[in-house]
Length: 410
Image (cartoon, rainbow, N blue to C red):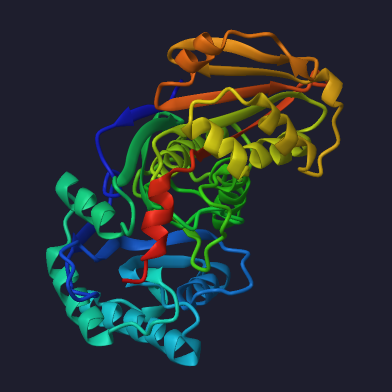
């Protein structure tokens, strides 16, 4: 692999600073709850957003900037309240947030993106948002610690912060991508994911990177599901400030291939971290559909497997109930021949064939239990009908998931 993983987060690429701290958005909490990301210069900005018809105010604000202005320089994010279903007042709060950040940073408000996550239907406490923006602007740094602070400040029910950084070469020039995201519940993206922020110093044309982001989101974030609920706030933003100094990527070729390989790696890793940190999850569940006649068939089947509540329960109970996997494939809407399907379960403890040609393979229950015991479980389903494949990531369904979501608002 020509992509090298490095220690870092959203400040890894040249020309980016970040901060994360507690502004006190929700009373009675102690977590960091606001984050800021700043590029030293205006950056080309691409984004993908939720396809839920109920869209949060930040989604509407950011869509306008991404598709009409195509440049951004700062991002302000709050947790606690999603600023969704808040009407015209909620959108006005987005505008006010951008204006406050613009004033604190000396920027045009139309270069400021916003992000919110948390409880739906509650207005933002703008006095606390204003206080937080001032503190964030004073705390901005390009340090490793600042990146970590920012990644921790966008968490809600997440148990782990999620960040990654890589470096690679474009025509002999070292280029970096740093990223952070959050997501643990209400996870079934139909665009990009929950909240994700990717910062690169690559010099790349807006339309080219927008296409890359959309295509790669389909194979990564859109292949994740924790609970089947598509959020009102799902957003992924990609900033590219060109500070690396590489020859500008304007179209197809080796340079774009290198960029796409790195972006695919970053987004895949973040997608997997979201799945394994699903609310209450004890296992990462990966479904690989291979031998498909086309990618779309493989994609639909893989997503159906990881979203099946019965299959998720079987993974939690370490139950080799392969019939639930085949059943989930059968109601997916994709066309395939069940009599050709082979199902193999894999983990660090080995692999075992559970079904051959759509029927039970006469496996050892003791061996299956051993394979199903580790923290990462892979179901590989071979359609034996072609050469295309797709992978989806989910998690098991546990008692803790219900506990978390039964009292989420409080």
